[in-house]
Length: 100
Image (cartoon, rainbow, N blue to C red; front, side, top):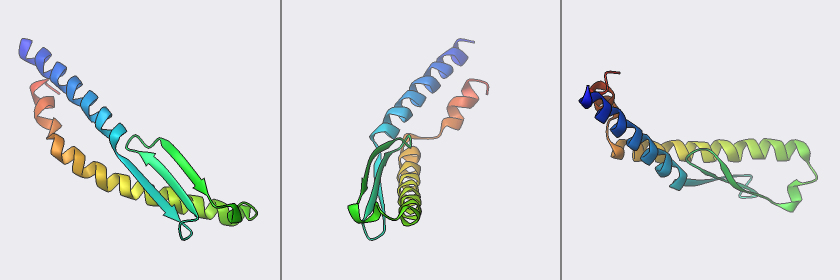
């Protein structure tokens, strides 16, 4: 029983470390030849958006370019996060110890 409690505590600690690691991962996506840039962290929070003035008058083009920039940032984040999570080890062992 004490092993399960310890395993759950370890799982919780590792989850908190993972959350902090995700906050530190930052990716910038861009589209429209750099006219739109979106910066996001690993928790997929938007940190910054840059839009060139010339796109402000064409709403349709702006929306399409924003979507492309978000997709680019998300793709970069996923790649970076996959590597970081691999480095943190396998959670399955901790979950087995906790009886999950």
